[in-house]
Amino acid sequence: MVGLKPTDVPPSVTIKFLSAGTAACIADLCTFPLDTAKVRLQIQGESKASKTTKNIKYKGVFGTITTMVRMEGPKSLYNGLVAGLQRQMSFASIRIGLYDSVKQFYAPKGSDNASIFTRLLAGCTTGAMAVTCAQPTDVVKVRFQAHIRVVGGPKKYNGTVDAYRTIAREEGVKGLWRGTLPNITRNAIVNCGELVTYDLIKETVLKYHLMTDNFPCHFVAAFGAGFCATVVASPVDVVKTRYMNAIPGQYKNALNCMLTMVVKEGPTAFYKGFMPSFLRLGSWNVVMFVSFEQLKRLMVLAQVAWESPF
Image (cartoon, rainbow, N blue to C red; front, side):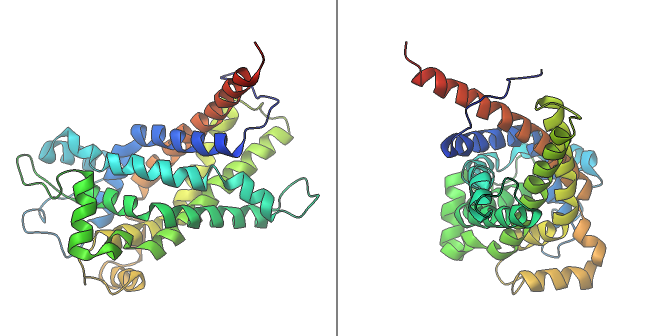
């Protein structure tokens, strides 16, 4: 057995909520440079690029990372990390931590196994709920990641708090909610791709006794979840990133952003940054789900130990 053994006591909603947010933060710390590279590749080709940065070209995942380190310094790979961690604590806690509860809510009474439709509905619900709460943190994270600041150059924001204030002051409070609709769409799809795929793969593997409920099982299920999520979510993810990073008035709405991309760059633009997206989502899912499973068990053991009489 690898890691902590499954416990007889099921984890409470609070434990799932806390462990999901914590596991997502751990995954973000490990994969954030890949996420930043993905954002840079996704916005490459936008007409709003400044004269100073138009000549900067990104080629591939590691080429993008190398270019960023050379032009902007190693710290640039973690631009927006604070907002990213804030996002995960509020976002992942809801979409992952509440998934099982919402799935049980939608499932017919007396049903032992939830149908695929019920799982998809639960994934869409918690994904939409999470975006509604965490959208400002996502906008700030993307703005930091998309900003190109050469070594010694001026800063766009003087920290995360200043970014929230500046966006609210210059664009209004609605600026912090820019791209909410495409983000809800994107995260509903990602949530289904990740959680439902992970759920089904893990359940199948355990049902046919291919593996036991431990690290290898969690790894395989998480890797499959990451791949499926990347394939289905990349188009709407690119639109979301472009729209969030756009200057006021550049696009009328998310649909206009999508149509502009098709006309000017062709359909392949929807899969810009696919490789870093997959590397990021695949590795992110592996780290997150493995950590999530272990943290749940650790917290349950801590709870049992605390409640046990001395």
